Structure formats: structure tokens, C-alpha cells
Length: 198
Image 1 (cartoon, rainbow, N blue to C red):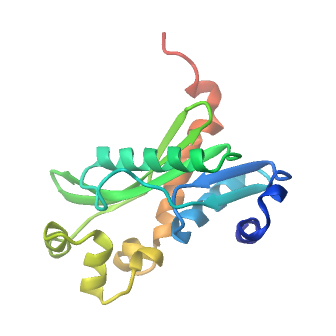
Image 2: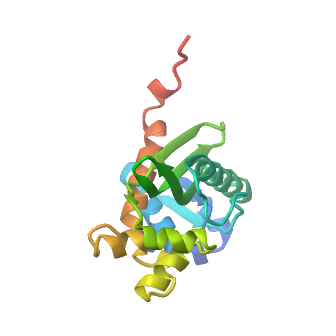
């Protein structure tokens, strides 16, 4: 599956037309692209996943779930617009939301198609410790705060905060995979999602 992504990233675009499904991901981060490859390949054959840098249209560090959704939706739509042959656009936006029990970190995943139908999913998450939140409130994003306290370097491109906090049990990619699977469910069950509630 990962080989399929690598090959289609270097083969001329004209050859991609022989594949059956192109997926556009609004990111070039492998921790976001690889889970998309894995989930879509479970349900479809000849999947080509193309990551592209797009704007989220929101702050670098989203601080509530509505902003996370907006960022993920913008990424999905912008990726779909840039990659003309894509059937689906995927946007993934991590962020924070304050609940009564603390600041909760997770990712929202949005998948859109050419009919503007939208699937939404989420990764698991956890409450962040106050020492990390203090750094974020002082202006750092989550990756910078984690790197500072755990002496890591660009942890968001590796095992992520999830990997650090769970000591490798759940990595960032594994968390994102759940969100992608949940967002795709809307398109795996079109018969019930497209039924009007009239």
C-alpha cells in the first residue's frame, strides 16, 4: 500500500488515469497520508493517495472543536480542488477543546466528494497536562510544547504527542487512522446517509 503511494508520487500524471481512485489529502505529512492509504485500501482497489500542501484557513493551533472542523473541511475542499482527478478530498486538523474535565486534544477528519457530501470522524484523544497547556497559552503550538518538554524534534512528523504520552502504544498515525475510518463510514453507507429525514 505504501509502495503504491510512492510510485504514484513520481510517475507522470498521465499514467495516474489508469488507476481507479485518486484521493487528495490536504497535507504532505506522512503521519496523515499513510493512514488514508491504509483505510481506503481496505475498501477500494487501485487507490492512489496524493498529498498536497493547502491552507486550513484557521489558526495554527485550533483551540476549539468548531475551528478544528472548519480547518479540516477547508483542507479537504482545497485538496479536492487542486487535484482535479481526485474522487475524495481528505482534511485532518488536530487541536484542543476545553471541556469541564480539562483541555482535550484530538483530531477531526473530514472527507468530501465531488457532490459536496461530507463525512466527519475523529481520532481518540486525551486531556493534556497543565504544564503543556501553560506553554500553549504562552504562544507555542502543541508540537512546540511537546518538543520543549520532552526534548524531541518535530514530534508531529513522527510518533506524535499520542506516541509520547502513551509510550508508543498509540502513535499519531494510528490515532488519525481511526478518524479516517469513521469519516469514510458516511460513504460506505450511502444508502442510509443519503435518505431524507422528511
